[in-house]
Length: 406
Image (cartoon, rainbow, N blue to C red):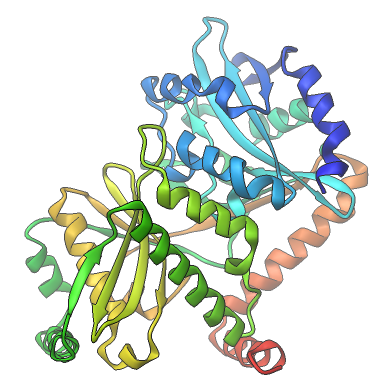
């Protein structure tokens, strides 16, 4: 895959110093193209100073960790597009990743294959005035530098920071999954009592006592690098096992993703998001592990894994999740983001449902069949996942055909 991009990358490198112009939201914007994040690191601070705010998954640290580990192994090449107005103000930072699909180049958000959200960093003065046509024109201008066949923008919040997301409006389809965000407040006990009955809270306390009776019960936060790497490795192994048993593609066994998570686990500097690794331990065993990342006002749940089957009856995942939410509230965060996908442990908290949108469109006549196929696949996935009966059949079939032992 890297060899397939070699010619295109040299083309991008030649064009990095060139400048294209597009008119958007009534403004002439000058576009620049970059494939080296380190060379433009200050741009993230610059556009943040202009009021732009996306999610932690578009932060410089997250995307740098991704490009240094998983991107090249996954066959994804970074293309960062920046747009400035006539006064030189940075109005847009668009972190794209280019992939080969059926021999053609498709642009999506960088790292979107393993990020909760795909977003552009937009000047808030530009965002409300950016039309669907402007977004299409933007990609048409990009395609004059990079020969795009199609665009696929996945996991886009329909709204962001209380405003419509212009990239989601550009011909988007409602995605197969919604996201779920819980508003936090203090004291946490009031929020907890509001969401759960006395009986449910009593049941969880009983499970905690059961785990405590096994000896050595504690909820721990990984500290030193060796402990962080150890728990990350256990998490990845457990998730791989769970996916294989369920007949699901084992993405957590992918060397690219393993390298990415291990990089996030050991990095702890100013330009990288802080990955939190928490675990529940009882009876000398790790029962469950949760990975989260904070962005100042919100804690994002990346994933959880049941590690020990012998502790399953204690519901270690639920105990760990409740502690994670409580500690986020205690730290003064205003939101807990469960991420995309429906699950009972999410809906039990009665979070706000955040619709997600997938935008797919062709950039050339040659890209029309590819865009049509991607659209059909997205619609089929949405139909199945949003229909409980169809989704149940799909999961049973998948386990039967591809689960462990087959």
